Length: 345
Image 1 (cartoon, helix red, strand yellow):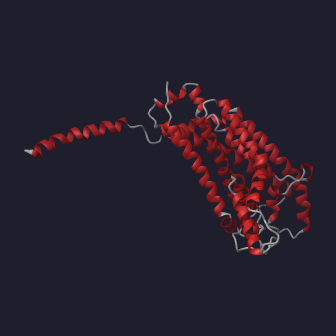
Image 2 (cartoon, helix red, strand yellow; image 1 turned 30 degrees about the vertical axis):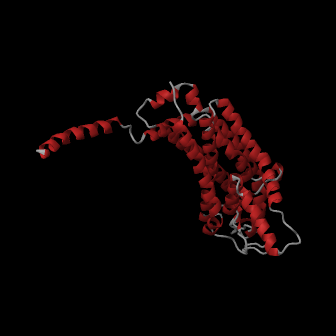
Image 3 (cartoon, helix red, strand yellow; image 1 turned 120 degrees about the vertical axis):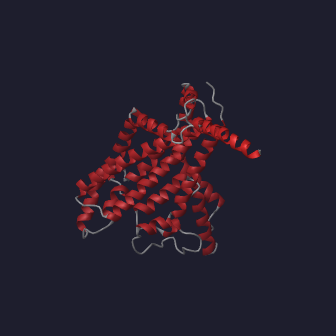
């Protein structure tokens, strides 16, 4: 008699399971939110203003430095692999020898913060967050979609900038970049988007924790200014205090102190990004900057030949992993806090 009861209950269980599946929101809700946010970003004045500012401040130094690079390139055999990459690393005298990559280091955090500081709190202040969550989407789709949209618009902006610099460089220098040059620029582009994503995750965290959009913007841009202006000086000072270099100590102890200072400096994501950028765009990299204890015996030791791209990536692989880990950590904190918050209509 148990078998007919079980058979009779099977359609009921199936109907209940079908009803629960029908109540679930679609798994691709974050794609819809990301597409909508990306369209809003690209159509906004914020995108065009930031793109114009970064393009002007990055292209002008490169444009004038091309004259110096062209004069040097004409004196060489023409096969120097560093000529094209010098567009990014060489600074013009008219701009106090500030290279393009130095301006990118300064401005990329601004882009990440600008597209993330009002990601959640603006929806909350306008009263649209509760209406958005009433739609058939998961709550985590909201923050995931906004983060993906921010990364996408940053990627579009940086690709546009790199293509513009490459086109102007080809016209000004009259040379065609090699595959190695383009690969190095591509790795630098991906790293730059990753560095901007760190600041985007930080800005999203501020938008989750701080209810006021204006306050989140002030905190975000204040941290950016502090890190850009005072961060390097303060971290260097603390590193020198914690790990002093004793001139009377043994060479091994001095190398250990220098390595400890370098590891402490890499607590800053800006330093991690600069290390990756330097190794990627400059194949002639000082070993001391990236080596561990026992691998360097002199501060003047240089790599005798140009590094290949895979060697350069291997040299800064720990920095790349650390930058990814910091970005994931900040986004994970923002993700958990957002899921735990109460949303009221």
